[in-house]
Image 1 (cartoon, rainbow, N blue to C red):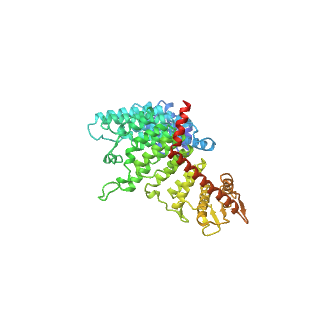
Image 2: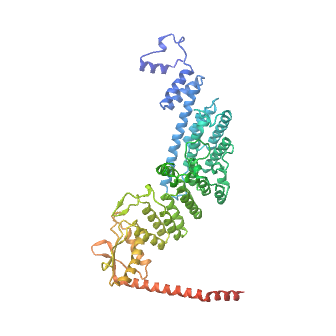
Length: 598
């Protein structure tokens, strides 16, 4: 071509001077084959920019790359768009964490670079006469990653049309899936698009794709699964009210049918993984109605993992470990749904979802789901329901992954023990919302079962002092521990009739607190004894030990006498109320007042 600069570089590197060798006019011209081969070689080594430079050289000389080179460039652009999108989402997450804002605010993702590269890939693919389905799948995923949801949906629709044509042309059942056809590429594309919707929290696009997937499945099956909840259109999730969503999916599958949901049988409908991704997108965008509907569609899959389906004595059925793995892959759905219910303050639907999940799975729900539901109930002042929830969950038999294997001083650790974590979080959330009586009830139950440490180390039955050790407790548990222990002192005083009962409370010096050497428990205990007890209980530091508080026997005796008087007064009030009920006096008073008003 007479490129002098290239000739000089070539001569310096290889000591070959092509132009000065003579006979240049007779030399063969470089054609599109050489350019395309060079582009393909660059793309094999992930060198996109040299490939683009060669492509621009082809345009200058009026040449077009062959289909193979153009396909390689498009795939490289798709890969770059996907990587750029991942970086953009990562930056958005970092900015969201750095901002001291509420949990409901989410940093918008700026898909600038990824959108440019995905648009370039889409434009080059559009210029091709014959578009391979594998290439279309890659471009659709790149468009979705870059936030070009409509363009991805159009590509998905065109692939669905091609898949239906392939189905009509094929007379073999089941559907023959050869490499490179639309039917073989669609399952991976469906999952990829829904994963990207889940990552972005875009429930609108997720419902678009779910509806298209269900429509394709219906065309393939032609209504063969009319009675299956999996054949229902995803449009129901956004159009129906919550009670209609629940009632729409009340079709119960038999055990044999539900056990086939995790087999390798190929289906183009929404499966367990797809519904889970839709649920994640709905949870991130706080569409609690969609979460509620998605839980109903996942029901047969959860029921299929119930421990009752494990291998029987005859050796029939999957192993329990297999069922546990399948369950764990879906267990996140409940947590995501409950979190959406929590933010939207839908406590009734949260309770319904939890009860259904326990019934379907026969297992203890994940910790995060229970913690979230405890926060919802405590926020509404429903402390008794929190206690009932904890009791109900712990009645479910524990499986291998629920059993604590890390025990310190006879008490399981928070990280390894499902029970300790559940009691700790429930007591903490009850304490935050001022439901102290319910928190005390849970602490007493946990301490009696050995899941939480009992604060009393020296009892008045064996010593003249009541000694409490609060080491290793947070503020909420320490609060309940002191209250329950002092009530325990009242009970013991009736039995032993002790005198001069000093109370020693060991709070610690704050060495293990987040603020080094700044105690957290000490000021909380002092505040509680003054503000929540009547008469107030004053404290003084133990001589030579700032990590221990002492309550004088005089204050303790005054408080215990007041407690006994209060219990007697409450007993008389209850007896008077019962008397008025049995004698009919209250009924006569109500009728008399009503007649006077009329």
